Length: 107
Image (cartoon, rainbow, N blue to C red; front, side, top):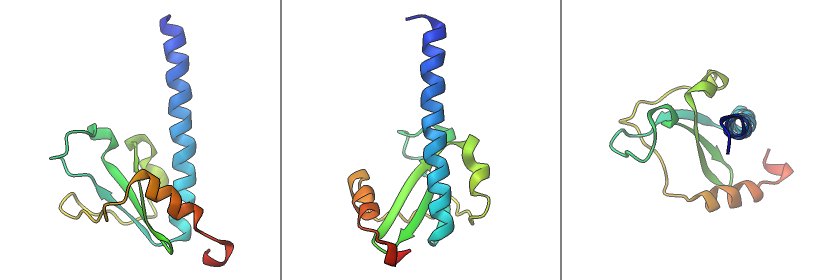
């Protein structure tokens, strides 16, 4: 694979994350939400992916890590430091089940 092909693939991945970030930002304006910092003790996350958007949906908590380059889209949210960690233990599957369980009446 050439460097040009790799760069093109990376650009597509970055854009997909950007699109997801825009949807999460919109959700964070509709439901109670805040930003928190993923603990440094968990080394599975790169430093520029440690911000987490926490949204309290009527169907349960939903969280997404966002890249530092998208942080400006979340300036409307208050920020908690890494000593505040509120994750309720849900999985990615739980997040999307909770989103699917939303109805027009809950918005």
